[in-house]
Amino acid sequence: MKLKTLDNLEFDGKTVILRCDLNVPLDKNGKITDITKIKRHKATIDELINKKAKILVISHLGRPKGKEITKLSLNNISDEFVKVMNIKEITVLPYCRPEVIDSVLKDKQAGSITLMENIRFYPEEEENNQKFARELANVADYFVNDAFSVSHRKHISTYSLSNLLPSYLGRSLELELTMLSKINENINKPVMAIIGGSKISTKINLLSNLVKKVDYLVIGGAMANTFLLERGYDIGSSLVEKDKLDIVKNVLQQAKENNCKIVLPKEVVVSKSLNDDEEPENIDISKMRNDLAIFDVGEKTIEEICNTASMCKTIFWNGPLGVYETPPFDNSTNIIGRTIAILTKGKLVTSVVGGGDTVAALNNAELTGGFSYVSIAGGALVEWLEGKKLPGLLFLEN
Image (cartoon, rainbow, N blue to C red; front, side, top):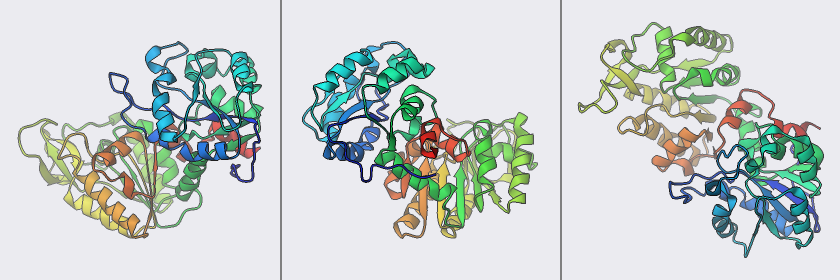
């Protein structure tokens, strides 16, 4: 895949539609609780301003499903956008049709920024309506996709515009693809993948693809319980997917055929319930009892994972290993996170972490700054690592 970047481009007053991901988390009062997504686009916007583009920013916020919802208006985040971008002003458009947008842009100067209203207020967006796509494309000269996190959507603002206009990658998306290629294409071995979370059903294709690429596959979270059950271990009252045992068997067979070592918990941290008053126990998996449930991996397993990490050159992490929201079941995530951060700082490994829960867990431990790259994409990241072609990136193949 050849990356079509902003290198050597000058816009000289031409209009660029820039697809951003400004879908920031909001509290119950509509206040932004994390500006990470906004900050990710600063490099691209700075460059487009310096290259004298008229910028039309397109994004969604929440899931309005084709309806105007006041609390999901991008007008609510425009002040924070201006502050992060360190610009004097921005024009925020109300909900309006492309011909109105076109008339506004015609009066704009090079280097100006116009923010279109929430693109998902328009039902045509998710329908991928081609008439609307052409009308929107007609207001611009170029399209720049800077939103990896929505590139798995076959929508107007991700897919159709890239077919209708000369299209390029923004700097945030370029960096994301460059870093992810280190765990999917240009791999520096040995490679370890840590996959956690609760359900195998959401990560079947991911696991099947990873066992063909990595040397060590660490399975954690409630997902590990199903693997342990297939291996014949008692898992007590732990969360498990008994109907997925055949899938687990297939993944284990694929791992064997590809010389990928599967690392499963040998020790686990257990309790009778998540909010049990008694002190959790650290026990060997063979000592599991029916009245106990697994909520984290144990000390020996943590040690094994850390030792394995020290032997690797590349590490990818998707999904927490324990119930990180409830201490002390965040212990494994915290210790393993610190170990990988130390290895990364010493330039011994390239570390990439992705997925909302994973990032949240490492944020809790103040560790996200210790990794080579932190992806804020969710579904797009998983689909890309599964080997699927993302609609928003198909223009790179033309």
